[in-house]
Image (cartoon, rainbow, N blue to C red; front, side):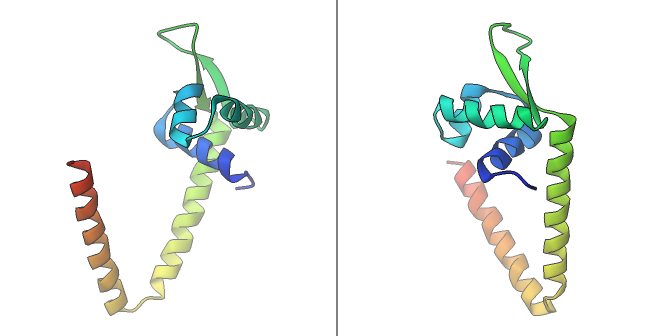
Length: 116
């Protein structure tokens, strides 16, 4: 996508998880506020994110993805899905059945984790 990993990760959070405050983004990404400020500044300079006043508290700012940021993330996701589909098409029936079993097991593990 042409972004450093930290910027791509933050943009992904904004696109697929919605607008957040700077401190919420820092928490999600497990970085300090000054680091997140630099990442958001870079995303703003690239036209991929923007600071917006919070609707409930005008003292706060929320960071949101721009239309260009959303488009970039969707294009990246589309490329990854196509690459995965191509890779999966090379598998035989038994290999696909093994993957189906693994996916079901992972789903069960996730359900157990979320139920704790």
